[in-house]
Length: 116
Image 1 (cartoon, helix red, strand yellow):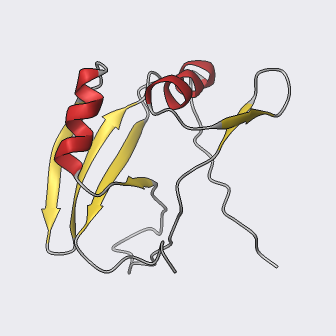
Image 2: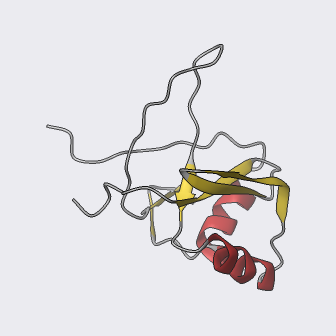
């Protein structure tokens, strides 16, 4: 039986990105050995969208108020990268991890499954 989701971010500076997830986002974690941190994430849900071109996958951290989340991150020195994207189903923005990897933030405007 499936018991959870394990997401992976590939990074050119894994240690700095782990520090960001631990110290800036405050995610609880365990040390799997040798400083290899595994983070507890907020409840998750999975959507399947039609592909336009080559199939891919994306990772977004959901928030109830994107503007408040961006303001909280800005107070910690984290600035958004790129343009925020608004659609009828939600609004998205991205921040850069120390490695430069973009991490998506998403405020849904549709019913969510995370509370089921």
